[in-house]
Length: 191
Length: 155
Image 1 (spheres, helix red, strand yellow):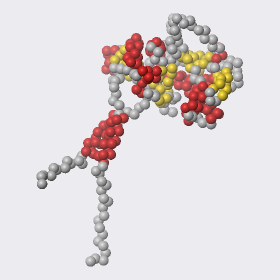
Image 2 (cartoon, rainbow over the protein chains, first blue to last red):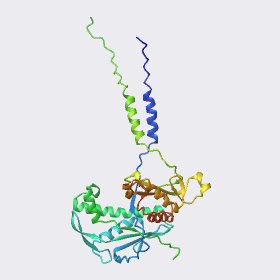
Image 3 (tube, rainbow over the protein chains, first blue to last red):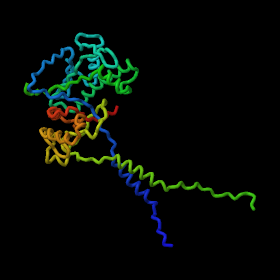
């Protein structure tokens, strides 16, 4: 009988593996990129004549941020924290105020006729506005719309928007649209 | 013969440690697989703005990143401390975004091109001027799906 080959001492493999494990534990980042999603409007065609986009005056609210990060919503200056309620009032128009946006009856597939606000939020900024202020305002606008969607979903389905299934979410999105237009940049200095 | 059994010294048997290394290796492979090494070096300092209504980025592989911010400390002597745009690994000007987007788009499969997202990672103190320029440029190359990267605000 030949010599027995000695078994390799395996007691330290665990240590080695632990060391490697610790290394990967430290270096790994599970971060997920999060952010606000937006769709930019396509570039207007040069040959095409600029259509008269006749949006009724009452259907539009202009949110402006100047270079000192001050905010103007509609006609009044305000703080970012007040913006959400202003936008919600603008989009719901609870008292059918003639100065606030009109509503239109739209047939939504899978739900039926529904009164949908025609309000559009137009966001304008200066070149000197800080990105932080811009994101803060964008965030408030999204928050206002999200809360309205939650309200609508609660009233019609008894559930929050995020808990609904895909189809119903689509219906809610149609019933409470997110119409935020990022206006063409204007050169303030030239004016 | 003793009447009383001699008290045995009972010791808790050692748990078998033979499979320990297997378990650890399994964990190790998990982390090795999930870990993603950073591909590009950050040349600009980006402190993301805070926001609360943020959503997850759906397809990471279909996303191109545009970093905007001031150059990191050791590059400031060379590039100054004005906000710069970083694409992939180097500083670029606004005009070069078009080539960058075209290159990114070519690298994707035909079916995925319409889902392409451009994530704008800008520092919170960046002026909107440069961001607006970038946005205009993106509109020109019709990369319309964008995302303002932000971090979750602690509320």
